[in-house]
Image (cartoon, rainbow, N blue to C red; front, side):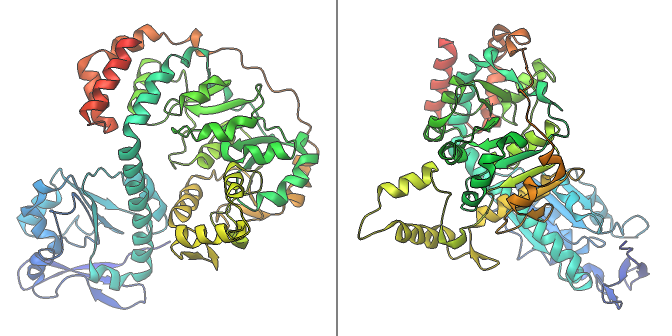
Length: 496
């Protein structure tokens, strides 16, 4: 338990200054011992409201170094100040600092040093231009390990937010268009809500398309009756090549490339998907889950709890597959083919669509191995993780998955190259040898017989969408700003 020992001491300015017991056991002043208000201009040459509209400051203390923010608050959408203790309760500080710290645009976050991961739930970023993260040197000097850990988590949150923002900007129109097209297929779909706890305490293996999957499939083929198999769409062809039929497929991609992965799909296998996925997916038996898109949120408001959600908030199909396994009650859960890197200078498992495409350009002068290494060097930008080539977004995916892994279940990572810290490393042989797996024989899949046609009414949904105010709000929230795109969506709604 990290207990922060601190003292409020009078300064020569008749205000308090702050003395803390630092991590190394010595006592340090967070502000000047005699003239703490001299720090008021600290941020003047650092903060940049022209380039950023969100500012995150690591280290609050008594707030003297934050004074300059008062002059530029209107230029920011968010100002977030983070510390590991609230020193302000009994402190005497200048009135203008008091006003600043209570300003509605300034969010003060006091995080427990023993539970820094709570920042992932607390910090919700809303930006258009960019995010600036600023260190308070005195706070870092007093608690270097804690604030370094905080900074690492904040960087991960920022990277994820920027990636999500970029994805939303690039695909905003496609997401919105897909959601409106897929509305018509919704009555034929099964709601994911009906799958809650449907596989309670049944073993499960989630299959991703990483290179390490090759070694797994040979053994899984003979034991596929011993566990529930959930495949991400890009691993489907690899399973098909080994005559393995998954119980569920997870597919959320809004682009038509997904069709190439699903060629090998058995017509009886249900696909877990979401409203913003490519409409082709809805030509298969679909289990629909809601995500954070405004049209999905509108459906949740109209029919609370009727559809349900297994959205992992990681932005990855693997994250949603893990979320579904947990939602369905599976235990233990194993994850295979999740390498988050390029082990042995290979990109994907054999027989996947990606591997097949590389084979098409294989020639005597540019063999597959050369193509692989060229791609890896280019895509990784020489990013190394534990000696293996990776990509920054792969590391982000791993960190996001780590953060959402359920703590109350047995989670295994099969043959990990970059291990998940919240999962136990295991070989496929040892997983299949677990008593829970060996003693389980897959039964006929439980029958879910209530499609959404029993619950939702498209007429009511379209009445809501034809309300100009509601539609405008959806455009704003979805970041659909292009006039041509808006006209196309209006035309699409008129057709429906």
